[in-house]
Length: 197
Image (cartoon, rainbow, N blue to C red; front, side, top):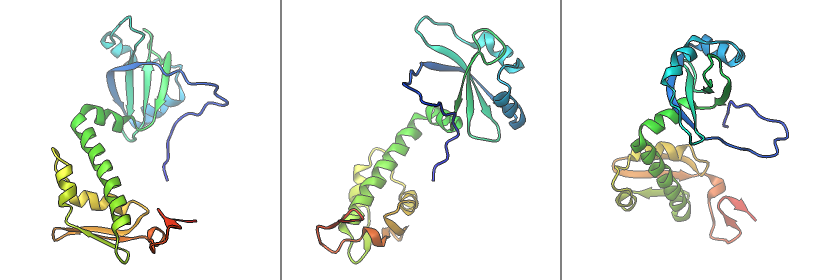
């Protein structure tokens, strides 16, 4: 189950995203973040103190302050337009994670490689299983993973989070996985990808 903290608009006819550049990042105590979240028309010292750090360009880019919750993951993006209150603002779910991924593009690339590899291994395991089990030293997959280094233990943990697997473990140089019953095939064309026709 995924929980996303975001405002929802009623009967929105279209979305018009705007280009926003974070020029300043501020981390607030949880109670200050909650106050900001609930009192967006009030003046805030951190906004006033950040005004001179915001760029001005003529390219339709909003230059913003990103206020983060010290105790949470979310943030509020603020374009004060020269004022000391959030004249324009947007609630940003998982802002900390987004900021961290932006700061470390190599981590972002590695995460994408791992996710793609998990997809590949999951499909291979379901299609190649014998008696509900899959075993591999992952050497073929590891060669495709270059230039990064495949974390085989993380791969096994990620497979454990997928519905296709009862269990997955990397030990003694081999990935050993047990396929979930609904993903087992008996060779008939009616049962594929866990769906019985």
